[in-house]
Image (cartoon, rainbow, N blue to C red):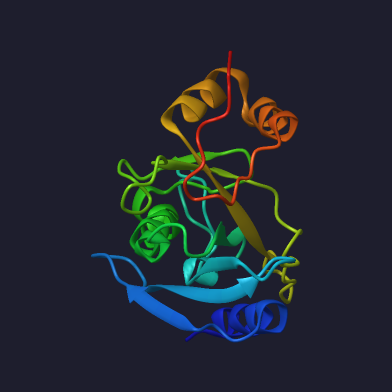
Length: 198
């Protein structure tokens, strides 16, 4: 494990406690991505959090750049928080690993406001096939690294129904988040219905 990933895991343990499970996925031509599961989060202790570990080992680079900078560039890990016991959300680990590998596989930069689609339900029976990437700095503070490395950002993922994802493409991430807020949508409910977009 690289120094960066050791620091990332230390930050996760300090903030969320000990992971109660972890799984590793390796895709052809990519580095290994782990997904750590943390139980008992939230004010009622009923949340389960899945956090990727491995995406931040390399900086994300602009796919149009002629030469990728091996040191500079945004670094991130992905965080999915859902209410425990309502669905088989542990099956989301493969989808999370796919999303975490996308900067290496597809050359994309994962940033707040982006929509990421896995093309299938995030877990069995899920009404979501995509996620909205939210701003970092809430649950897990950004991890500052030594210069010239960019900090590691822990980006929350908010599951979207296909209708919400289509609406977001037209109106933007901020407008969708306002809809969710106005409707009092529980974004951590793994079985929630889509918000009214009329």
